Length: 126
Image 1 (tube, helix red, strand yellow):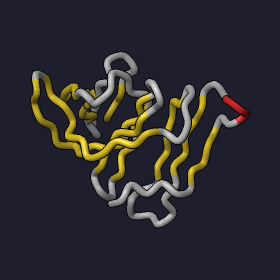
Image 2 (cartoon, one colour; image 1 turned 120 degrees about the horizontal axis):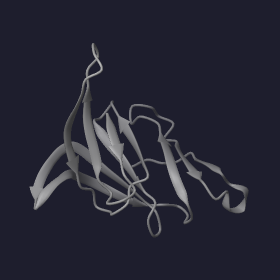
Image 3 (cartoon, one colour; image 1 turned 180 degrees about the vertical axis):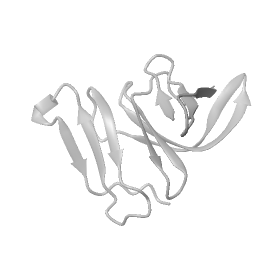
């Protein structure tokens, strides 16, 4: 299980046993930003999408591999600037294997009456 935190921007990884209530902490991984609001994993290509609700809002794309630079970081692939600012807290991204290229973003402040925004042309290029 992957959990992101808004204080520090780290992604915390846990192994959940399918046969018991055992939870094992795997590790904490830094991201490019100091705040992370949401995660989306694309099983079709192994990419982790990390939504950062900081400044202009950013979408960071990483692999599940990591490297050490003082502490452990997820390996970045790309970063995208949000199409709008605001209190954007949640994302939903269709898998890369789907040809629709959709991205959903939630705005907790419902700025301009747009609590849920549907972007139909999100194509990160892989």
